[in-house]
Length: 315
Image (spheres, rainbow, N blue to C red):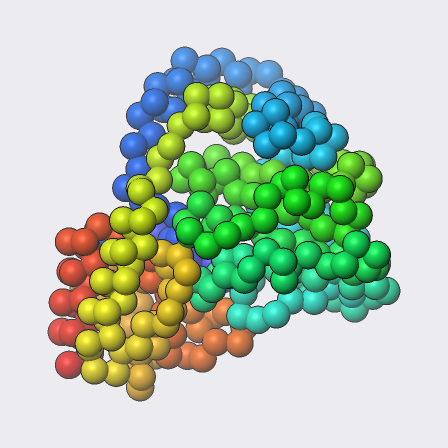
């Protein structure tokens, strides 16, 4: 297991969590009420494959059900793809999400995170798709597509192509990391190959039920994105006023911050223990130095508190 953020389980007294890229101020009351009435689902096995949710998603996306596969979160999809195309040379441009495998083989499987985690940078869709006759296979992870206003690939852009897979995270879209839910879309031949390698019952019954409820009822839980990105700009501006603090540009609500002359690991521990604030030690990402943390924008008053605590700690 690689290093990850949002390790609240190690810090019982955290009051503000900047470590997770998932929006933490979410009203999930409708989903909770619905699932509370469906708890008997745990008495039986779930569907071997989440076909009922795939059908609903395919209809919403305007694609065939044979062009979509629901998984136990995006990380499960990543491992499924890596195992299904294990003969390929798997390459990644760092820094990026730590769960993308890298191995030598025949042919190329290229992992692309867009918007990229941890930098928050996005790339134009046209740069992400390989030529139609290319033997390369591009896997484009759009887990954070709902946290940006930058243009993103659509599923209909790629399902007719033999060399492109698009990953989506319902975990992040609906802020339900404890349930683990994601899906991928691709040409039907690629989906068929992935489905043959999928472990049966990998998506639990409550996660399937949650997905169907959220999609069918068109539930929106994220804040208005123009507001969130504007608050991110304000937050970054204030951070950049602190001596030795450099907040990097971003296309989404999370971004890297360089704390010149300070260890990210030590800063994380100090903020957690002294102030009840959790940040992400970004030095655990391959290709990033020991002075970097990653922050995800929170409510204005919470962002202001972190500013005050950083000033106090760094002075």
